[in-house]
Length: 446
Image 1 (cartoon, one colour):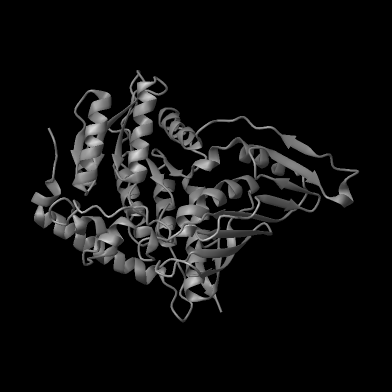
Image 2: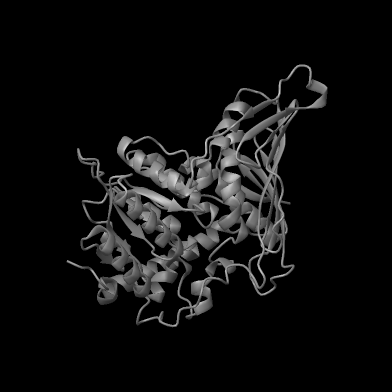
């Protein structure tokens, strides 16, 4: 039985839900903002309960998943899981798809039905979908402002989660989601930063952990690309998508609170600061996450950043960003991001005795001149794993079956969100920020 448009027919319940979401958004704004007096940034308030029992994977090992959000990223995930099943690479079945955009959802529904030869269930309200007892996991490919709420609801419903990057929109949400996972260890969450699967970062993690380059001093990485007219404009505005007809606009806004219909905001939300951190959360996380994992320098403790509108002046988020991050073990990371020039920084980790280069597919260590007689150069020629995003998808399925915690987990994801959120605040507020790992709080400096 299909569950189309139940959200639209349950008017009172949906209005109450959206009202609550708007109130929560207001609470986040107060909790997450730094007032002139230097208010601390803390986890979102609220009681954290216990998750429902997790549906076990049967003896046949078939993992049943749902796709929450069927746009560009969600559609790509659907294609991959269907391909895995068709080629016999994974025992996986998409049993449900959910989207408030009925145009996109119909495309996803037809695609899944044509491939699997069955009738996939469709939903507008994800809360109804996650009540299903046969679901093992939910892949969340919604806009950033929904990540935290949807992930927590899915985990509390006993579903394992694949959550697209960035983990959350703001740091208070990340700190709360971390506590949700820590208090409910029977369910797991994987953050969708696929480069963490590249063997060169595993090799670097081992090399650096063995002390090959001595004390780590500073590192650098970047994600830079270019466009003629502005970033994320390739997301087209579909005239068939109309609020009240083919789109539940109020539900899409959810935690952002009620807003006037804006087709550009809906289609290109990464360009707007209310809904996205732009370059930092959408692009830089791909490079920063595996590097932070490999270096293992503890929590970020100080973040300062600058951003500019140098070419794409119509975009609300910045088109050029530069970050500097200090870590609790005594290390500095420099990061550059651009959507107006494609030439970035080489990915390098510097130590007192040597330097590790990670720009290509391999991991290469070159001793510093002063230690050339004592330290031997090293190079690890790494396996070509093909599509690293496919590798991460398969890793999630494996974790669902084995209950092994994923490498791209909530602990690492929270460290990255400290960088993402505090860098974003630093650019908009013109201040440096510090993070205290003991109290798990952050505040502006000065």
